Image (cartoon, rainbow, N blue to C red; front, side):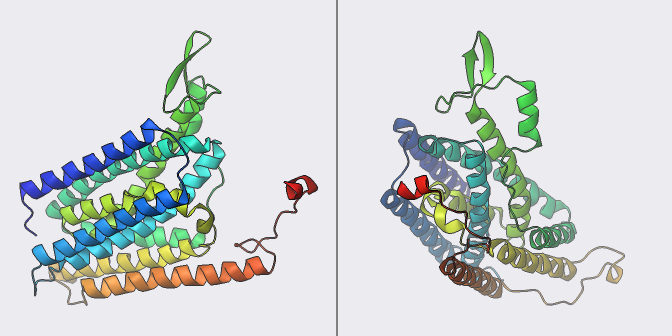
Length: 346
């Protein structure tokens, strides 16, 4: 795929402009966005992603070379978007664990998304260099995704504590203020410098983003080896994530089989990566260093499988959780907590 320096410059410039627009809007008036506001922004971001994919399809199309880059973008974007939705579960846990005020959650999420974009840009660059220099890296990517898929199936429950080891270390090392002060990370308390709760929230979001990048970048490199498409798919997947957090906050708890669906998705891409590695094999202890004649899954089939997995996961999750709620249970099948008279009166 021949991407000019001008295209890269425009893409990065537009990304920075959108982030600055978000920063200005949020910083000017911190608030909990309405459902209408979230829906308008999210519709705009999704429309932009679809328009961009159509542009790539028409402008960079190379028939006959598995160079249907538009399809590769859509497959990568849908995969990254689905993994980003799983991120939202962790974001919700972090916000609840730290008791972040609702009007400050937009600011925290925005900083977390910027950190995620920064980490993913680094991993995208490292992945591109590794693919260029080491042909057998696809074996490692494939094995890692298969391991991740197995881990998701084995442990589908999200931890209800947003504090990881790094956050706990920060609590031990620094004095933590009890007061929230917008996006300020440090304040003076009793004449001494102290970190704010927002510092811990952003630290938790940042380290979580780092772990998710380890999964998402190998996954998308299994669908396209074009760094430009990998970068833009990640950008469009993260744009609108803040609005999606507020729009789908309640609905996310009903996607009870999301982890299993993502496990199947990652396993499929892991198999695709291993098959691609065998197809391009140069390791001397495999088939004498010659290419192995295995089936190389085409992009169109990959896109169909991704859409099918995500669609089935969403439909089955909503149907089953709906039945459980009508039976007086939580979406995950556990009994509902009894409502106190005070809560009922309220």
